[in-house]
View 1 (cartoon, rainbow, N blue to C red):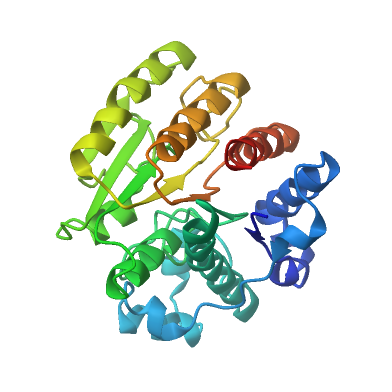
View 2: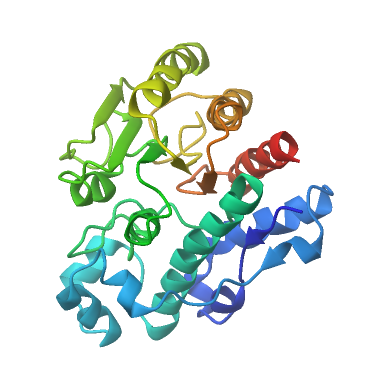
Length: 300
């Protein structure tokens, strides 16, 4: 039985006005249960990521500022979400979920974090709704414990994973691959190991052709022994902050390309959520739910 990392503890304790940006996590969990894709026993709370793992990626100075809640108003605005003891614990919980999901991936082939994908956080600062970089911390965790020797990060959020790209720019054991909108946040793009910047309005056919042509060769050439997949659904045509034009079906086919490529090669895979900002929250929840449901069916 594949288990999924999830905790609503630090969501419900947030002030009411601060819950909306992360309400989708609860709704995705509920949708998976309602559809019968999972049972309650598959859900587990991964706890809080300890500081010593966080500072393997983030600078001690930045972590100290977070712990002391001493970021300046400008730095908090750059992150875009309120900083409090509870929101920091929520971030630590999300990171712990991605780390714990690596163990599930080694056990079953697939690890799922109903959260995570906070790829805009740099070593020394947060931005773009991201306080801590969960995938970067989890990747470092695997490398330092020699659980993986070559890691591939497939980032298909509509926004480039600039923080992740910057963190691993000099790390040969981590290959960062990003397909994102060319004319979108962040204004200044970092250099991933492979960036594919798509023009605004790119739809299903072109997107899937590009991904289908590049991913198998990439896996063959990079030869990873572990894969992280940042499965942001802000590629949807309905997204308020994205400029691509994928349908829900196209988004699902994107997911299946990644999932099946990893399953075929027997590569341990961890999937995190990433962004999603469609006007109708139901569209966001549906797309994220489809991602996880598809993965569970392939690996079930």
